[in-house]
Picture: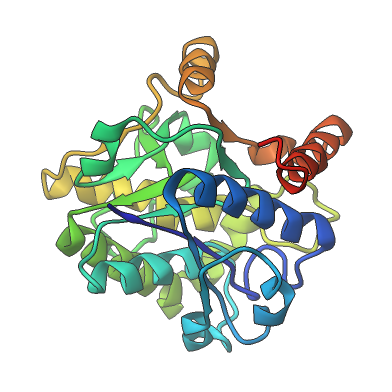
Length: 275
């Protein structure tokens, strides 16, 4: 049976977790515990106490390794988590804190070499790959085009530890490459949801995590299994299957009032023994 993990890095998108973010971690963990008996959190010393009352079997602080890193890539903590877990050579799945498994995953997905949530299209424009494509060092083998895809990693993991480790190492290397610093800053600025928000834009994170995964899997002929069919353009098909298997990823909608209310309603149902 694979192990299920969440991660939180204080150098990421949100430096200090607010109450709602903590409660989303709680709800995610409650569903994982219900279906799989236990789950784990990898974080850093700065954030550990924020999560100490949540239902994780163990909370560890391996992300202290990047405690002094300042980067536009807020997914760096996830990439390091993937590397740590791949090095342990056990089947694992990393779940984003805004992903809720209302049911057990279909059994055959748990045997995947590399499992992701789904395909994303139009990434050339959405990720602002044009900002970096002409200047990215050739060793990263990026050759973006306007028909490119990437992989959404709301869930990520599997049994192909050697590939996952190599991919995570490359993502970390790309993130920390000093030649990319100014390029990532421009890409980040171009992909901010809100220009008045001091947090980085999503372009560097999506490039180093989601697009790099597509590039490396193609270059190394590694098959990728998608949990959800279709892509971000096939919303009806994807949402129908998502509802069927009980997979919920809030993504950008998590701050909407009715979503916030439903998260707390589900937590109350767990506390009352209804779920």
